[in-house]
Image 1 (tube, one colour):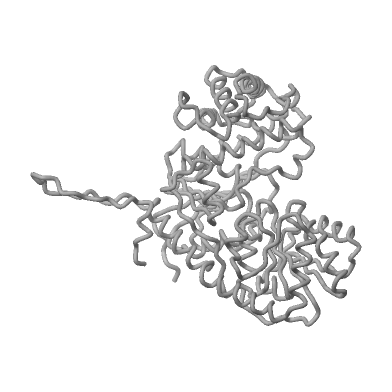
Image 2 (image 1 turned 180 degrees about the vertical axis):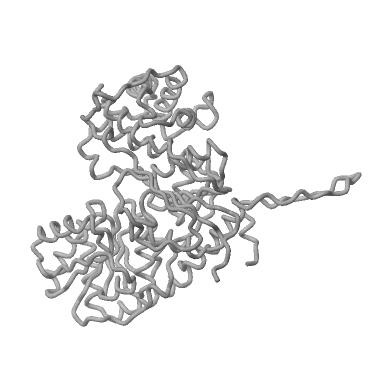
Length: 515
C-alpha cells in the first residue's frame, strides 16, 4: 500500500523540463519528486516553447496535478503585429509602473535607488505590472516603448564619467524590445495552484510566474538555480540590435535579482552559483548550497567495453550545447589517433537534424556516432574511454557528475562550477580552446593506467559529495521548514526577570536536525 502524502503541497514550477523532457534537469526533478513521496506535488510548467502532449516520465502517486501553460508566440515575433487587436488606453498607474521598470532596468550594476521604492525601481515596477496581468493581452496598453526611450535618455544624461554609454536605441529598437518584454511578462498572469510552497526550478519565465504568485498570495518561495546563472544571449537573438540585446540581458538579470530578494531560501548548486547570487543581491542567510547529485545505481562504474580509442560527449546536441567545440577538437584527435570514435549521447529529438548537419560538415563520417537520449542511463558513458565535458553556457553540472559517477576519466572545460566539481580527479582545459581540449584527450587515450586512476578517483569523489540521497534529504528538510504549518501556540509563565532565549531561524533548522 502506498504511503499517504503529507498535507504540505509543493508547486514545482519549471520552464519546460520535468515531466515532459528527458534531460538532465528533468531527471533531477523526477528524483526529487519520487524521493520526497511524503509531500504532494503540483507540477506546473510555464514555457514559450512547444512541449509534447504527454509526459515523458510516469507520474508517481504523490503528484496531484501536472499542468502546462504555453505563452502565446504570435506577438513575440519582431515585425509582426495583429492589426485587428484593440489596444486599451493605459492608466496613470500603468504609466508609472512602466517608468519604474524601465528606469530600474538601466540602473548600473543593479544598484538600488536609495530614494526610490523599497526593493528597487525594477522590482516595484514589476510588482505593479503584475497587478494588471490578466486577459489575452495583459500589457497591450502599457507604454513600454515610450518608457524605454525616456529611461534611455535619462541614463545617457545622468551617467557618470566612468559609466560606459549604452548602445544607441532607435524608435524601432524600443518597439521591438517593448514587444519582447510584453511577451516575457505574460508569465506574470499565470495562476499558481493553491499550495504551501512554490519551488521554482528554472530561468526567467518560471521565475516571473513564481514572483507574481508570491505577490498575490504571499506563498513562500524556494529558488533553485538550475543552470549557470548568466544573463546570456540566446541563439535566436543574434539578429537583434545591440540595444535590444542589452534590454533583454538587463531584464533577465533584474528578474534574477528580484527573485533573490523575494525568495525565502535560495539553493545554489555550487560555490560558483553561491558567489554569483551574492554578487547580485542575495542575502547570505538565505543561501543553502545543495550540490547536484545522481543515483550511483544508475551510473555504476564499469570496465572499458572497447579496446579501440573512444570518446564520449553527452549533451542535447543543440546550437547552444557546446557541440561545435567538441567536433572541432575531435577532428584533431582523429588526426592524431586514427580510428578513434566519438559517441554523441543524449541528443534530443529536436536537435538530431542539427547534430547530423554539424557532423557532416566535419567530414569525419562514421567516426562520429549519434545516439539519441537513451532510456537507460547506464548506457550513457559505458561506450567511452574518455569523457569530454563541454557544456553549453547555461548547462547545469549534472552531466559532469554523471560522468564522474560512471568511473570515466574526464576532460572538462573550465566553465562555471566544473573546476570545483571535478577537483583533482580529472583534467581541466580553458574554454573556447579546441586545441587544448584535443591535446588532453589524446594524452588520456594513450595512457590507460592514468585513465583508470582518474576514473576511479572521480567515482569516489562523486560517491562522497554528489549523491542523490543527500539532495533529497536536504530538500525534504527545507520543504518542511518552509511549507509546514506554524507550531501550535505555547503558553509560558510570566517571569519577573525575562530569561535569555535564542530562537533558531527556521531556514537553518535542517542543519542541526538529526534525521
